[in-house]
Image 1 (cartoon, rainbow, N blue to C red):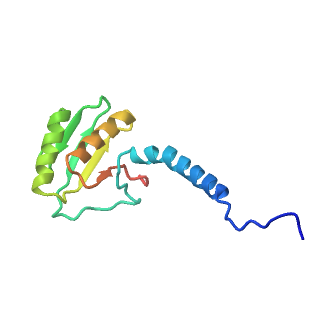
Image 2 (tube, one colour):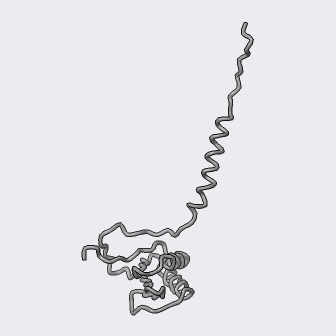
Image 3 (spheres, rainbow, N blue to C red):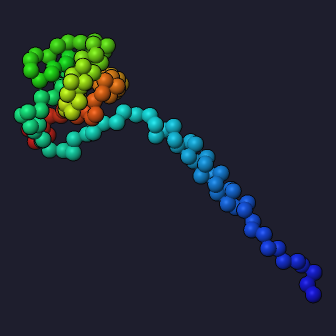
Length: 136
């Protein structure tokens, strides 16, 4: 007879170790994924909006001043609370209104993100970024 006795139990220590590593990875990466502004960027090329879809156009100049245009008239200069209020009002009447953001190339990136966050909180389902045609 052998002096060693056979063990019929399952060793779960390696499984617990793997589970703890996966949990640690999840805990570290989950907060990183929650931050950011969701934007539907254009895929490239020049897409023309149908004539019956008047977009809400928001323009940000080099100094960070904001102007809004509902597609029917001239740009109106607004501050951040007025932008949020006007955008929410228009998107409340027409929820599927395309929202276009035009920004000068020298505009501070943080200011653009701030405007995008205001538009998103006002109810914009997506925000398009207007660019110059690269072929010209």
